[in-house]
Image (tube, rainbow, N blue to C red; front, side):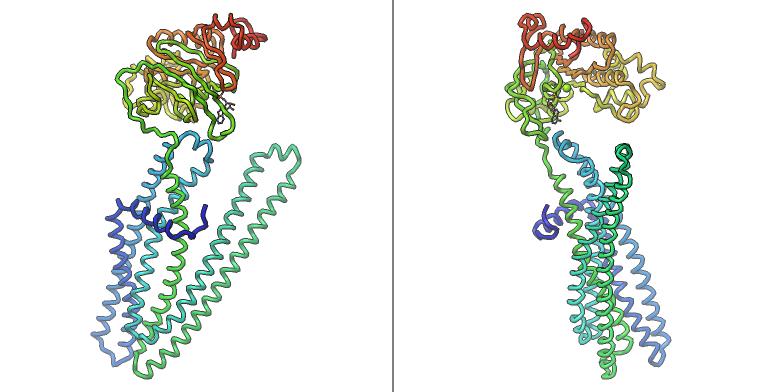
Length: 592
Ligand SMILES: Nc1ncnc2c1ncn2[C@@H]1O[C@H](COP(=O)(O)OP(=O)(O)O)[C@@H](O)[C@H]1O
Ligand SMILES: [Mg+2]
């Protein structure tokens, strides 16, 4: 990442994008700007009338003029405070709206990303993009622009009044301003750096504390409590020193600032007194001028401060835009929709390595075919690459070479929703959401009549157990389905795949947690369905034996292909696999 504020071009570009993002808030923002101007005008006029009132008190007292001046002062004060309130409210309103919009955009973009992105990015990073950075970024538009503009308009307005009160005194201001600006800039630079260091240091000690608490068993069993406490104290000490440094910097800054201000006021009073004596200025005017001058200094400082604040939030915006602009490397923008899909799947010389482990090939030149209306079994020892084939079929990743065809067309050409409705997958570790049983089964479907839900659950041998649950189909399954047993979860996941009546059904060890009998029922129900292409990754011999074709995958390569009897006769890979496994298993219970 680049150093903050080093590329003004980037900042301008990001600023422009932020403004474009705020376009839907044009109306409230314009309202806010109008009230901002009104408030500022009012605030500028108040010192002017204060000076007037003082002049009126001194000269031969004119009751009428005095009342009028007081009245104007009252009206402007009131008008400006009402406007200030409306301005603040409208800016807040737009800020929250913008925040909501950016978050929605960011989230939509995030869920489009390929699976590899989520494997490579830490959840904490994604969460902080979604919350902290979007908040900072929205602030930059609403709150910062608000303060920035207010200060800018006020600086200009006050300058105008000061010149009209006394241009000679105004010239003196130009001794002060450069001094203040330099001072403020220096302060910002050191202060910001120290603030960041303090935050990092606090984060470090928090991380250490978290690690120790969660690993307390290890700490206890190695009797390392005292060492850990000392380590924690060291971290605290480091934070403490940084904080001291930060506060000393602030103190020095404040002392310098006060001295400049004091010197300025002295010079101002001397020069003012000179002007009054020569009849070039009234004493009321001098009071107004001094009031303005105090304000002027503080607004100039705010402007300088806001400038660095803005670069800070531009940094946050940049991070958010990085995610917003990120294009998935596995795009889901296919268009193809077929009236009738046969469901013939072909792997053609597919080679693939996972993005997080680019040097290890999970699949090497894999070719096979899944015919429609047939059950194909994929077998092989664990880590061989079976699930990887399923992941590629699901388009979680893109193979580095070779291609996967469905009915003769590359799967990436198919329309995303259409494709996933035709492809039913029950994964190795099915994930349910904290919804009701019914909502889980209908996940991602628009309309979903109860009759098709029960049809699916009956096939998955799940209907009976669901009916027995306390609230039947409306039972909440708990976080990640935690309130169900593994076998129950699997059967719901099977029903969830079956309800779409997919042309291609993939069961990746989907019945591993079922007992023999349930598994048998499910298998029976599946084999009754004709015309479907079924791929089972099974771990029980019984299931595999009945398959129309068996494919053996080892170390990412297809080793053998054929029917059970053929492969047994060949006495190759498959035969050895069975032998190895049946060695300590009962007959018929052989598990891969
Ligand atoms: N998400 C992943 N990222 C990196 N490597 C993976 C990932 N998933 C699986 N692998 C690796 O790919 C190889 C094949 O795994 P897999 O297809 O899950 O085997 P199995 O045949 O048991 O289903 C293994 O070496 C595994 O470590
Ligand atoms: Mg697997």
